[in-house]
Amino acid sequence: MSEDSTSPAIGADEGRPAGGLDPERRRAFLESVAAWLDETSDAEPAPAGLDPEATSNLDRIPDLFSVLAQLAALTRETQLQGRATNRLHAELSAGLERLAESVGGADTVTKRLAEARREARLDLVAELLDARDRFARGLAEARRRLLHLRGLRARLRQRPILEALVQGNGLALDRLDDTLRRLDVEEIPALGKPFDPRVMRAVEASVSDEPPGTVLEVFRAGYIADGRVLRLAEVKVAGATHPATRGSRG
Image (cartoon, rainbow, N blue to C red; front, side, top):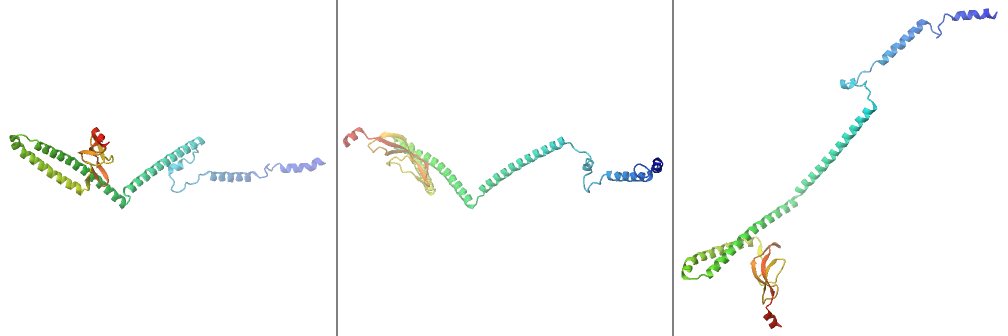
């Protein structure tokens, strides 16, 4: 009796699908899911203004090694750019410092111009002193020869020439000495003075009755200008007194 009561229930479920939907509804559901998947798989449009070449490579995903290599190259390039920038900054700073020094103000320019004029004047003075030495030697030689003329014929022939040389060299020396005075150049007084190594150079020593260190002769005059020694005086100094003089003094 129990078998007859359960058999109709089993027979009634034999025609229904196992999923609980009939075949028609199931087919429609599957078609809607497939259509939704097709819509989501479509690529989104590229942003406006983007290079087409860039969008063509969007589907290619680089590997980790390529990314690290590109990152290392970018880091190296950044370091090189930083060094170049630092070097350029240092060169620019040095150039600005030199420019500031060259145009450091009116006082600096004035001082440099004054120093340049002073050096130029000293160069001119050195040339004048050399010329004066030549005229002085010529005058001394002409006077020596004039003093030692012997014989009537020599006196008649050479005296006018030597006298002209003495007069010409004397006039030239006077003009040069006047120019040196206007340039504030002074001759160092040496003859008969105690030897001063700051302004003199002893080139010879001689026994003399004068006190030791006394300048006996000036071989070459020395000069000073603006407190600066232009040339040392070359002199002969007394080295010691005569023995007889020392005995008489004792």
